[in-house]
Picture (cartoon, rainbow, N blue to C red):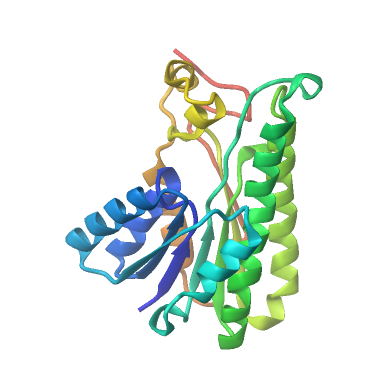
Length: 251
């Protein structure tokens, strides 16, 4: 039975991945900042799939809290087979010269430093056992840049680079590393980007059929259950109506 740790499991792709893994019978370590949501999701999954779950409520932007949380994992869950670095966000949509620096800090601290903190804490547990699979959730924004998204794009380009370097660094330790890069997925992503403006966020997905969190969760679930000799290094997945970061066929 595999054990998986998922960051940002309180909503969107992280939450959907938790359900997809539970359907396969995985033991789950679910993390996020919102403890009430973690409890609700955990109870729901246990009721539906009867799998073992623990939850860890902490902010991955804080290295000390991250280390304390990972160190608190009970022995029965210490054999982590899969780490899904899903927690991430975009905040604001403006030109560099007009941007809110606090938004930059939040994206950099979550998307880059948080991913690094969690990986640094979990990877040695995998290396000790000589096996493991790290899945980083990137973005089309890690392959291209677009107007008003400079710092978000920069953070996802960093995820792209870190994934490649992790793959090299841990190759001899038997650790797989994958990068899953979605295009437009309708989750809380745009609500967060527009700081709670749900009306504006809804317009982002009008006129075409976007991806769902479950679509990406299904891909992640497939990748981590492939035979040991196969690693999907990188995958870019977008709605049929999307050609690149900014070109959509809206009707």
